[in-house]
Each structure stands twice: as C-alpha cells, then as structure tokens.
Amino acid sequence: GVEFTVMAQLDNSIRTRAVVREVEPQADASTRTRRARLTLQETPDGFRLGTSISVTLSTSVSPHSEIPASALQEVDGKSQVWIVDTRQKVVNPREVQVLERGQGSVLLGSGVQPGERIVTAGVNSLKPGQKVMVDEEGTR
Image 1 (cartoon, rainbow, N blue to C red):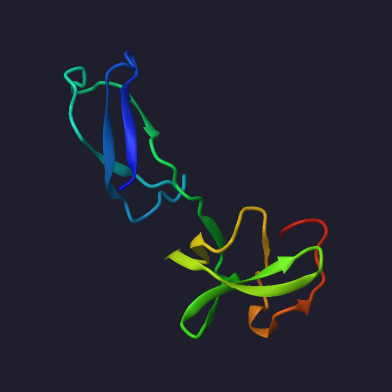
Image 2: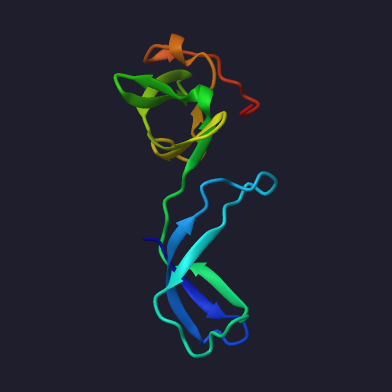
C-alpha cells in the first residue's frame, strides 16, 4: 500500500512508517475530503496517547483527474474520452482507466494528462479526426 512517514511534532527525530489501513468511502460533503486510518509499522517510545504528529507521503502517487460524467463514453466495454488537439483543432478518442464513478463526475486513474482538454458534451456524435471549434477562452 501507500507508505507514509509519521513524526512527532515536538521532536522530528521520533519517527516511524505507516500504511493506509482504511479510507472512508464517502467524502465529507462540505470539505470533500475523506478520513484515512493508518497502521503504524512500529510504535516508537516517544509516541504516547495524545502526541501531536505530522504525516507525510513517503512514496510518489500518480495524479488522478476528475472529469464530468458527460465526458466519458463507453465503447465495446471500454471507457474513453475525446481529447482536443488545440493546434490542429481536431478531436480523437483515448482509452481511460476509471477508478471511481461519482454523482456527476468520474475519477480517472490514467488516460488524461494535466492541461489536456477534453470534450464534455456531445461525445456520442464525434468521429476520430473531426474538426471542432476550440474555445480560446479556456475550459468551461
């Protein structure tokens, strides 16, 4: 699993490693965060009940993209989105890995890079290489 470094805030020489044990399935409605529970790999003597700690990610995690559900298209049992080539002003489909489907949105594990533009409406009427009008003002 994902590994974290756990340190005592008053003495950062007191440290250990931890792994994710559980992540709450529902996000908090106001903060859109989820509570995570970690399991310490070992408990240093300096960690007592009530000790203030800092937790940092020890390993790299690939970024995920959250997109509108309307941008996702299912073709032959595979999920895809339409990527906009802003220079040539054409669209092409690209297979994506869906991690989670939410209400009105989809969390992708791979397939879309940060900064790439996707089509979010009318995806069922597109053809590969089709010319499109590109909104020069940015995403909406």
